[in-house]
Amino acid sequence: MELTRRQVLALIVAVPAAGTISACAVPRTPHTTPDAPVSTTATRPGDVPSRHKSTNMQQQQGLSGVWTPSANEVLPDIKRTAADFLETAGTWSTVTDPLSRVGLVPELVAAAAILQPSDAIAGSLRVLYPQYGGIATDEAAVIALFDQQLTYSTESVNRQMALDVRLARHGGGVWQVRQIKALTSLGEQQTITGSALAVIDNPSIILSAPARDDVGTGRVDETLLRVLTGLGEEFTFGIQVMHTGHIQTVFPTSKVSNHAVGRAADVREINGVRIVDYSVTSPVLTEFMLRASELGATEVGGPIDLNGDRAGFFSDDVHRDHIHLGVTPGDLPAQLR
Image (cartoon, rainbow, N blue to C red; front, side):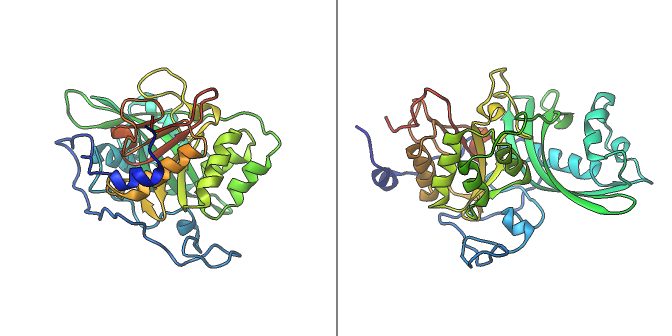
């Protein structure tokens, strides 16, 4: 029997959060776990005031202040290690040598050089949000979104990037950054479609700079764009990453991810609340995931699994802090079957 969205919301029950906190986890800053979204009252420049819109760049990105781990994190030490590394290596001046100070192995120095452009004379980096990209026993990946101010001889430039940071540990010890994956591209610019413009121009869809650039290539899947536009009619949500900066395979396998070909997006927050800060019993999560499937998403992964071991919906430790929306040609939309 197929249940309606209303019936599912009525039947939802508490589900324990997956994963175990590592013994070497850093101290966590307590966060509330809201059952309802927190609204805002600011607006974007030029927009009609709405409780969903915002006025400054940080608010437009759906992020403000210094990132701290949520009380609901599966392995906060992984995120903290990646964030500390990036902020140390990405904050520098000509009189310092942070790549040496953070103890980089030689093969990592070249990859980390993306944080220190050769023609810049100083940098200041702040991690906005580190998202789980993959978790194994002694290996992990973090997709870190950050802002960096670069100072040149004649000007200062602000940039926002997402990087695929790989970590490892030996014998259950301390996590260490081992690799930064090189950025990839969706390919040559194509004619941008109306669906792409609708996503870019929608004030309810808060795109990170890398995600906005991906949509702007004209290469993001049309069905996925329509899913996002439909969700934007009912929710305000922030997209952490689509292609650029995301893992290109399904960690830790070699299977190509839908992110690699412009057919997936990761949602970091809904209505101003980070996914990881929602209680798993929150109807907001259920309603958002169900609506994505109704709009055509064939992969809907998040903090809860709405159909058990069947295809479509899924949940695991990696997706405790974001909702994955993917579209695989030929597959049916995720269903409660």
